[in-house]
Each structure stands twice: as structure tokens, then as C-alpha cells.
Image (cartoon, rainbow, N blue to C red; front, side, top):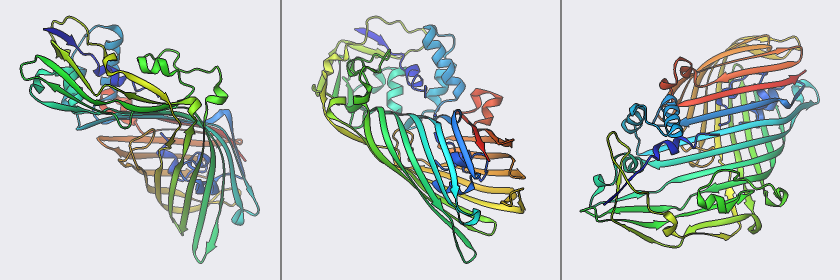
Length: 464
């Protein structure tokens, strides 16, 4: 009987290379309101008369989350995989002891390369506009608990049983070019601000495994393994699909004819804000839209062999003192094929909400009202687990202190899936230069073994 050792646990951590729109920006600060407008375009009303971001003076959001292992544990796993030596099984044990039924990793990076915000008309009746160019890189992966148990403990635990292995992996890189507008209406004692942003989308690359369904059966006496089901997915953009199928990751992008390789699409963001005295409620629906890749730059990926049987193999876990020999039988027997095929992929649409309660009203030098103390709740809810969207809510309860609309400092408690963390942010405006820094993973500063996320928000711009 040939034995195969699987060390794929660390490979899942290897997906953690990319970040999400930062929930901190939903707190009402004029310093970063132009960034908040990407989660709800009605925040344009909080901008200075003119607000400008041009790289390197730009906004950046980076976020990485998972629901089953600490950030420190992932780093230790990756170091061991990279070195090829096992110094300690502690990070593996941490992973196995904290498995969920569905184990997910999601990451997102958003870069505001250009944003010009301006107002037309008198301050209280102004039309607010925003022109923007942004770059996005997203990845999302979900694997069930049996997948990890197979990797670590081997297949003998499943003797005489069939287990489902249905990995869901998606990744996307795209640029959006947008124009936004908002207008505030005074109705009785209420201020109502509807807003909209329209975006032209250029997809550099998209790939997903939606539709993949695999089942692994281990014969009771271990005489054979049988894999049934189908690998199914789609990919488009400036990707080298041959390398993708072979599992190669070096030089995966092909830029020879990138203009023709780009996907095209249209997106829209909707938002609104209602303010009554010192209470403000904001609701947004963002990233509605899709990108289409033509037949010339897209493929459908599928396996043509519905049943694969391996005789005389025994999968064993990567545990202490395990001897092994041989290699995992080639997955070429799945007969993965690609076929040129147009496909359309939706963006990760999200619902956003912010409720703010202000205390001690003040006015800045230009007569703009603000509140010295702000208490509130921010909420982001996706509709599916794809790209930078999650069907689980992301919640933040915060406090923000504002001095003369030129300096803000705040803190929050945030929750996502199995993550409970603390956040902090600071922003200031000096001679027209606006700067801000924030994080939702403050606990990680005391040690990466205490948090399951890495998170940072950076903003540099000009406002006057």
C-alpha cells in the first residue's frame, strides 16, 4: 500500500495575499468623507468645498479575515510550509481545534487612485459631485471541515464513507471609473440626501469555482479511493489559462494584448441619508453591477471524467512520526478541459448602514455644523460569499471625538463571524492636507495570536 502525506493545510493560508471597504469610514468625519462615499455616495455632502486625491495622495483599504485560526497561527504555518521543516505542530492543532462547518478566508484591497469632489451652489443647497478612479483586488475561499480533516488525519477515518469536498474559490481584479452626485433637501425639520454613483468597469481578471462538486469514497478495507463529481468554474481576463489549469502561479498574467483581454461592465451605487437634529441615518446599496468577458478572453473550466478511481493508495495526515512514500496520484485523470466561452460575473453587492447620535453641536470656521461627541453603529451586509462580499454581517459600534472639524479620533468594537476585535482611527487636516489612519484589528497589536484578522485604512488627500 502506497502512502501519501498531504501538507495542504498551509496552502489554504497561502490564499491570504490580497483587503475590504473600510467600515471605519462610515463614522461621520469630514477628513475621510470622500472614502466613505464609496460605501454610501450620500457622504459626498460631508466633503470640503473641494476634495482631491491623486496617487500617491490616495485612500487605501486592506483587510484580511478568516473564521477559524489566528493570524499568528497562519504566519507560523506558512513559514513551515516555505521552509519545508516542521518546527511545531501547535499551529496545526490550533487550526484543527477551531474548525467550523464552513471555513472561510476573504481578503480585499481597494485603492483610490483619483478622486475629485466638488460642490456647486450655496452650501446649504449645493449639488455635490465626485469623479473617481479606483483599483480593486478581491479573493474569497471557503472549504468545509472534512476537507481539513482529510488533509490532517488521512482518509482511514472515513473508511466506508463518502465525504463531500466542494471548495468555493473566487478572485477578481478590476478598475472602476465613476461619477457620483448627491443633493440635500430640507423637508420640515428633516434633511434628506439621496445619492447615486455610476461606474464603468474594466475587469483585469476574474476566476471562480462555483459549481464544483466532488465526493471522495474510501473503500472500507482501504483497497481504493474513488472521486466522483465535477470540477466546474469560469475564468476571464489577462490570465494565462494553461498555467491556471496546471496549478502554476508564476507569471500567471499575460499582458501581451491586455486591451482586448479586459472585461467590460457597468456598476451603480445607491445611497441616502436622513438627518433629524442630532440623529443621522444612512443607508447604501453598493457594488451593484457585473463584468462581462467575451469569448476571446474567457473560458469555461470543467472536468470531463466524472469518476476517478485510485487503487492501492492510502492518504495519511501530516502528523508526528508518520512515514510516507510515493506521491499523490496525478489529478490529470480528472481530464480538466477549457472551452472558450463568454461569461458574466456579478460584483459583490453589499448593503451598508450607519446610525449616528451627536452631542454638543459646534460650528467650524466656515460655519459648517458638527458634533463634538459622536456615538453610533455601522453595518455592512453582503448577499453571497463571493469576491469581497460576505453573507455574514460586519458590525462596528463606535465613538468619535471631533475638534473644529479639523481633528478626529475614535475607537470601536467590531464583530464578524467568529471575530471580535477593537478598532481605532485618527484623522487631521493641516493647511489643506488631510490625513487619516485606522484599523479594526487593534488586538493584533498585542500579539497576532489574539486576532483572526489584519486590517488597515490609510487616507491622504487635499481639502479646502
